[in-house]
Image (cartoon, rainbow, N blue to C red; front, side, top):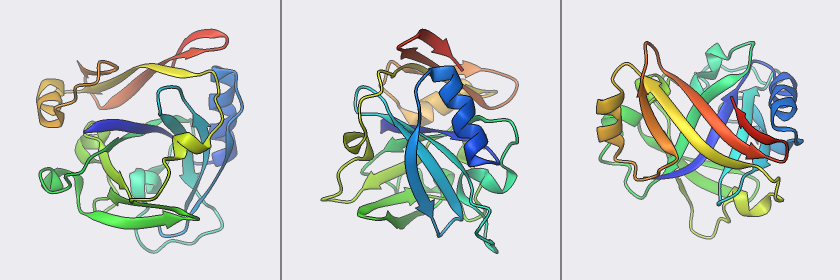
Length: 197
């Protein structure tokens, strides 16, 4: 399991993109639409082969099925909503993550785990799992350098130790912290200095 990208969620894409851009001091770039789940996003390339997205419900799409990333309950105030890890093994954690489904956007093709009700595993403390299809260039390689680097990704959860053990992450940037409820804290190195969100 390897950190792939992180996601800020918001009820309105422009609101979320402005909010994050103001804090990081760099503009986010256009992303695209995910018709299957009625969402759209903005992107930012990070150092070390990572990227982040701001993702929100697409108001032009009427959905009858649940949106992914728990975006049927997208917050009005932007917040970190999810973290996504690359894996070659969808089977081991299938009971936690839900099934892997095939997705595409333009020439990007990938498989990603999505519970049938659109919720997040362990309220988001356990990552969504992804595998980019062979021949698909990772989105981070397509994004220009932003001067922003992820220094730390904290996963807060009442059962942080058990979540950490289940994930088996060997990434020193990812830390599991005991807390009263599931949420995330991210620390970045930016052109303006270190920023914690």
